[in-house]
Amino acid sequence: MAVTAVEETKALERFILLVLGAASRRISLLHLEKEVFLLWNFHPYIRKYIQFVRHYRGPYSSEICETIEHPFYLTGLWQITHRRRGDGISGGDITLTSDGRNEYERLYAVLLQHSQMRDLLTGIRIVRDVYDEFDEEELLLLFYNTYPDYREYSEVAIPIYQKRQEIADRMLKKNLIDIDRYNDLVLEEVWSQ
Image (cartoon, rainbow, N blue to C red; front, side, top):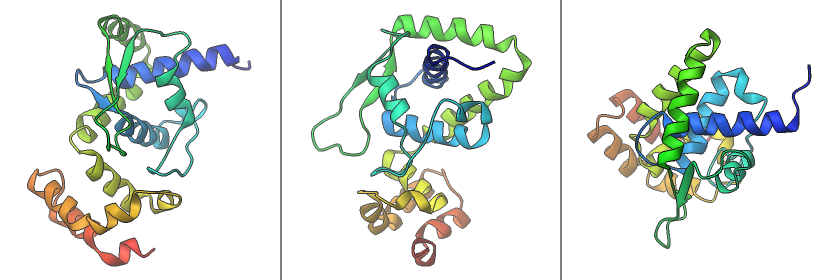
């Protein structure tokens, strides 16, 4: 049975709500895109609704941006706050409204009853818990190192590359990476691929 455009839109909006609600803190649009990209790589369910392309800040999905800026069905459940002038990386911060938090809790409880959804719900929480700890530059450094194809078209890959030692130092100091990952991030040969 084919999925209709309406069902696809509703599923995408619900999925975005699940990612936003998995932690009680705000999330930048950049983090949302990259965290969904990680989930997209490991959960085939998501691939039906979202496409990623190479873009000026790494993996980019127009579906995510359109859903955040102009939700069709789940209106009023989140808000985006644009940051200060000169912030060309974050894309702004997204927070759930109180109605959004209530709808997340309701949807989460319903989906938890379905065993095939539990892995996805757990994966979302793990990704949020781990990757929310990185600032935008740190997250991009990890992505450009791990997914070098996404450096293409990037307007920030070269500045990130030039600051890679400083960024990796911060990550090591915050215990977000170990020394092996640190060495991998700052190694020149990795970036010349």
